[in-house]
Image 1 (tube, helix red, strand yellow):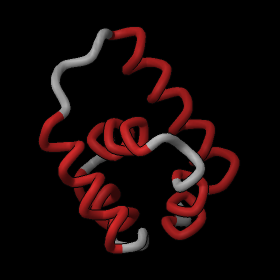
Image 2 (tube, one colour):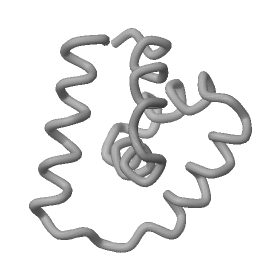
Image 3 (tube, one colour):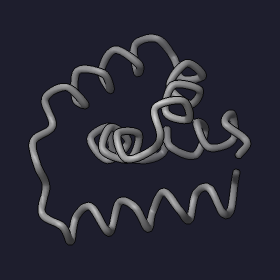
Image 4 (cartoon, helix red, strand yellow):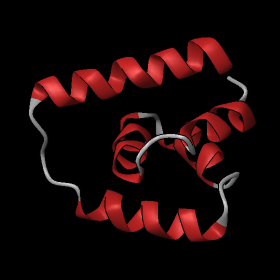
Length: 75
C-alpha cells in the first residue's frame, strides 16, 4: 500500500469518515497513514476515533468499500 497516496486521497473525505476508516485498518497501517497527515488533522482524527461509538453495519460496510476503493485506486 502506498501510504502517502492513500493519505492524500483520504484528505478529500469528511473527517469522521476518515476516522472510522482508519479505525478499521490494522493499527500499523493506520499509524503510517496518520503520520503523513498534517498535525492539526491528526489531532482531530485521534479525537474523533476516541469518541466514535458503534455504527450501524450498513455504514461500516460503506466506509469499508470506500476505503477499499481508495486503496485499490491509489494504494
